[in-house]
Length: 394
Image (cartoon, rainbow, N blue to C red; front, top):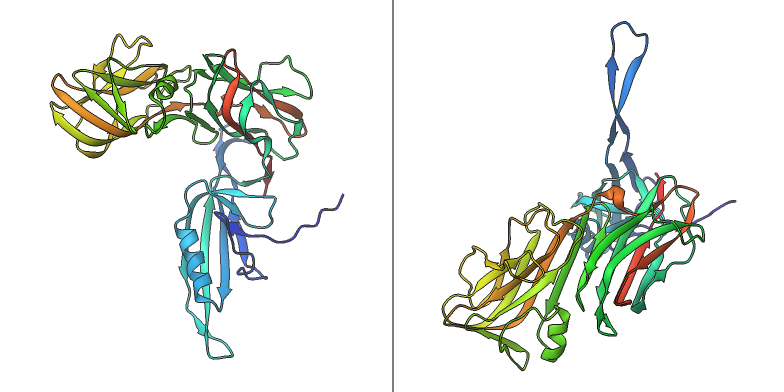
């Protein structure tokens, strides 16, 4: 089978195909295997230990008579975020950027007396492979569980795990989504659970739950601007509040020891990285004693306690909560003091959980299967996406 493709080069969605030199415009390097050679006395052979692969580098040379095109190129490369997509050769193979830099080379005159601009860039990718197109469960809203992908195949050169997943919880027949899980089953079988990951014991309504394979992170967050009925908002975070909370015109008022808490359920453990538990909120007004950010590990909130932090101020506040490494369930929130009135117009809470790459469902080269997202209650997601990408050595 012969496959012919058209050239395509893009960085973070910015198409530079027409800017790249036709000859030697893209030069890959690196990606080699590192080995340690160990000589053993008395043996007539050596031990070889695999030390991993080098990162892959791509050197780009571009040119244009249009200054704005070159300036746009320089801007896109030098501001490309980590893990943004880079297509070096064609529209069906991409790498993920670890770091990128670009600079102008000396401009020169061309025939009409105008400047001819040239620039160079270096794109660094952690992996030696390039990814194939997204397959799996495409982004969709109002999803009923179980959600099952079409039959997908690993046509690449390397074992490939699930690449990315995002989901948002909802309520169905009064129940939240519980025991959310994802697995891959071979071919059309439904029985196997050996490639399954348990993701969340209970979701919030309107939360965002994201899984990424390389950073070994699961990020679970909830955000509200209090722009809906209070009866709807309290359903979002499982009615974890106290007293006669005042809610009017998109503003939430806590006073005299009232609190609001956002619960996040395991089973995945909270990461030990800084910033793995964060609460952010916007204070419109504040009178009396200082309010305090609270944390609870028990689902009943019976162990709720204040967190040490700087004074809360009118405006935006961001507070990191340490000491939660390894925890499953945690609840984060804010409590008014004894003689305190605090008015909020925005609230966000987020936790980051550790996920070992080997736990992700996978397919071997040449193997086919289906991705299945399931739960034991609730059976309704506001949205869902699961991506799977083949890996090709380049």
